[in-house]
Image (cartoon, rainbow, N blue to C red; front, side, top):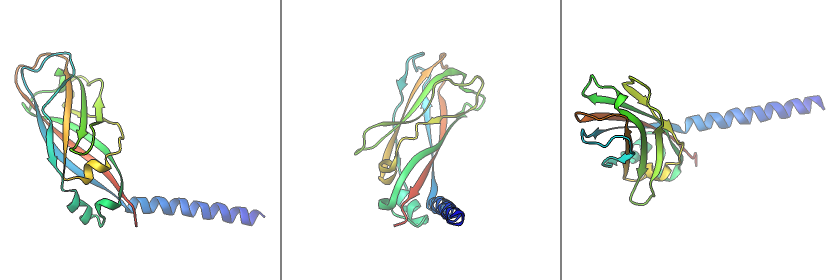
Length: 175
């Protein structure tokens, strides 16, 4: 009886590890980099939307390079979103109180994908928190829109350009 129990435990462990390894083989990352500007006349204190950015995806090519197709993609989430000030280079994020990032497309309703409720003092790079929203349909499409809502902590005397580095985790079905 103990040998059978041991065999069942070993078999179960083998399948659990095997399934995890298959998921790892079918998981890859898509990188996107975009910039947006916070204008010097931006109001202080209120959460205000910035002009949306339309992103043309290269998802079909990325899927092909990872030996899959859009119809086999089963799970896409935002894995990382970092913001870095590119101009002026000596600026930090002390002007920013709060930020939210949203995604939408022609066929899909808008969804918040990342946010930061409290911006750390003197930060030159921000690592936003992902909402872990399902983004499959956005990434499979030809284009999607990224919209930012920001609240300023203090007035901005000149335009500030920010680079957004996004990384999406993509898992495809084996069949």
